[in-house]
Image (cartoon, rainbow, N blue to C red):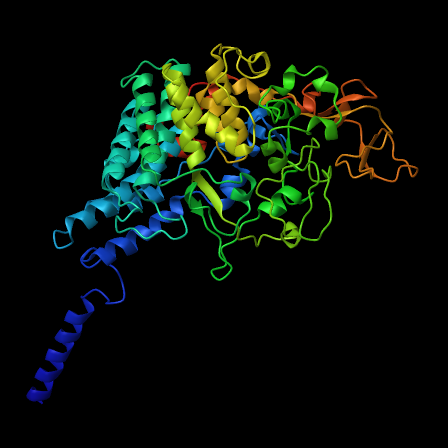
Length: 577
């Protein structure tokens, strides 16, 4: 019995010892960072921090140049801290945990630095989004335990946080591998490499530099220093020789694979992995999307095909749609339904007022496959950062600094216009009065005005416009009237696509005698002349649709629940309880 008892005791002790060990099929601190493969596996989770395809192509629903079917609460004066969101920190902890544990000397130093660069890129992305939204935020560079007193600390200054963001980006730009023989495989433009970090740095520094300049923030480093950083980062991408502009602007947004010449990074769809997005459905549906329509005022900013200004043309504001869009910058036709727009079913499509508020219906991001119009199963690649943006960031930073040379113009704005098909793209010498009157009354520099025009046209509907409005301190643009096409008369059928068939009629009461789609005039739709004129959607003169803007709206409020949990956060000016 004693022998059996001893054997049982040894077995029990052995079992207990085994139970105290970590399961072999789980990752723990002790075994998660032993090899380069471990670092790669862990950092793969960071890619969920990148924007989704849907976020990219419908982000500009909050902008001045798109009219949505519903006016957001934020712009109607009823938004409060209880409506606010975005105060989430889980993904930051994931990054900080990695940075606290990755540095295993058994792993080659170059590999450790590369994956640390990826982590610090993602932390910079995280904080850039937080600062844009809230201004001052608490800076954390360590994983917090549940009892860490820093969980309830107050916010750190915008200046301090952005300095850390810049340091993280500089590290990433130095240590991330490259796609040009730098041991980084990127066959589909979906990996963050050194050039992605440089391009993103140019975006971040341009935002911070112009935000400080136009919001009159005096903290160091100065606005000019941030603009210099933006130009320097963009110039390194340009000098690499790895990137160029694609030949066709429109195809960039509807191809199954990303254009490797122009796309630095994209969100890639996959039928096999069931990674889908809903661009077609969003822009063609009367019920799923927001029926977004480009505004007439922004249509006016597109140049003529010969490079001249459309708004210098006599009577430009009373042209019917087919004449208005003819002989313009080809990017207009690539961005909205106009001219002979034929899709996979062989039919010609005109603007659909059932899915568009203004008549200027978006076709950018919409692939030809009509079967995608009623389901969220699209797999086309969605560029997140393009070389075109790098050129625009460089040009704007240089223009803001007052040092944009003729060669700089030719290699950036000139190159973009030539790619688009504009026959003449000289550096301007006279400020465009239309842009001054309608968009940028405080800007007199003709070059800077043209850079801003080009940025709006080239990057339309790529989730950058509201950021631009905030950094330029032009929030008043968010109250701009939603103007649509010109209507010469009510009850007059109009041929919008020039195919000889009438498409739409604007009426005050439905009529069986009109054999077209009918748009009912009333509370939502008005004509500027009563029975003729510019189409007005949810006119600001109508009290229920009246949009507002004041300076507090350049930042969102700290969400109410988070403020209650931690009153040390304080509240942004104008949003106090």
